Amino acid sequence: MEQRKRPGGKGGLGYYTAWDKSATNGCIYCGKAATTREHIPSKVFLLEPYPENLATLPACFECNNGFSEDEKYIACFLDVLKEAVYEGYKRQASTAHRLENDDALRSLIESEIQTVDGKVLYRIDENRLCRILIKLAKGHAAFEWDGLHLDGQDIHVSYEFAFNMSKEALDQFEKIPEIHKISEVGSRSTTVPFLIFQSCESGAISVFALWNDVQEGQYRYQMSYNENGGVRIKIVIYEMLYCQIDFC
Image (cartoon, rainbow, N blue to C red):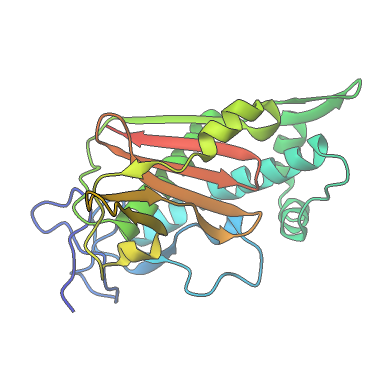
């Protein structure tokens, strides 16, 4: 099977369509020889039993493990915040287990999420959050689409919590955008759901990027292009954190 170069890969930085433990498969994040497989999205944001055929990409040991602590922090923070904000919601068993076995993480989140006089006060480490959102966005783009050159591009990350968003803002975020180019049919991009219309009069074809629901209520994402022609990845985690990552 012919392999595809990783986005932005130059000078033999690696491949990502097929995976095995060999020096010819490069880490999707740094280009070094990959010795592990990285799940996209990370399992920390999902519940067991995990979805079948969860996407994987080659990654070096350092990158695969280098995001773990930040991912665990983000997953636990979001779940604890959701419990604090939404009456009747109980934190996931995986969150409770992680906090029970990590005193430092539990103390950190307790200091960052507090309820005072019935009002939930919170602050999240934006550097850690943005680091993980960019990592997830790069992973989705690498797995789904060919010919993307993300390395060295400017990256803009925006996010908001559902409880702070108006109905109009939520509707705008959920919008299904029309896109003007997709990867070749038969590549892995076909795992992304598209809606295709063809005009009976003109024969013109319109393609719309639907949401990819990895696990209901836990994680979904959408891939399209932004106004500058760059890649846009939208991610919703726990149906509470709404994120948009633009590569320009």
